[in-house]
Image (cartoon, rainbow, N blue to C red; front, side, top):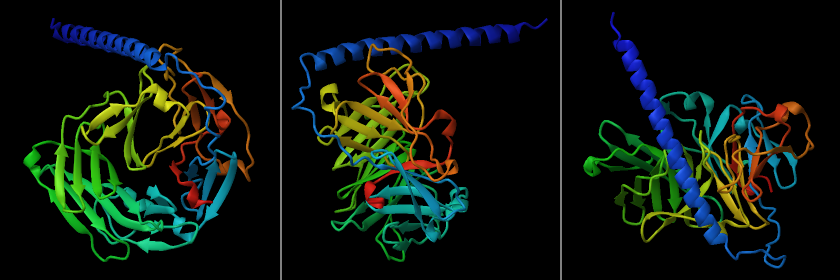
Length: 377
């Protein structure tokens, strides 16, 4: 009888157990190191009533889609805990690819599922009703745009990666232009960079892979390229959110199938590498995570992460319990239960628990993202 199958299967199970043990040991060491670092940073740090900034009521809004075929979109203001509705015929069958200020970059659903964007890309200002159509077609990729001083779109960016040629392609267009300006970085860097995020900071266009290890930059001032490899790489088991705000590039590394905890980073422009933000700097901040856009705010008391996903194994601060507690924090005014967006999970990083914004039975998988308050107010 051939016993090779059983021998191979036993070898696979033994190897899997050994890898699992190594992962658990690595997480234990990381937690011990983080606990020690946290205690050192917070030693002697206290908050008096005079040090606490006023509560920040400028939280971004939840933009969700109760019914894609409808011209209506549901917006939840987590500051006032009130639902609002906006309506426009341009919103029918359209999904948001990126947003900034008062503007949304939209695309029709059927093209999201196709191989190419054709001619359904457009910018929309829901407050004014202004619409700017963008030309196509071109392959799928990642979008971003920046704003002029008056708050209107300036550069609209599309970035993609050609796997066969290892080329990064960046397309740029200004509102009302008839064609995209194309820039391509060939394979001289001999590295794969599967683009997950595209950001615009001043004159710099930045393309980042999913773990932050590889960064490609295009300078709009002189059209010069910079390729940065082997930056600090975030753990494979984490999900990363990259975003720019106030000319800073931020990253939040989130736990995924582990008992790890949130970590916060910003890009050091001199070293061109990721630096972890210490716990003292993180006090009195709130972080709002979603794809494609995230935000952070300074103000209020404590340290919070708002997300659309429950991270059941999240461990809070280093050394604290490994499972959050759940508290329902209220029913809010609404026209009907069918209009409810996805749930918002509020992770309290100081008290080490998690609150659910809506009763759990109302949670759904409808598409949602954070958007700027200026879309509504």
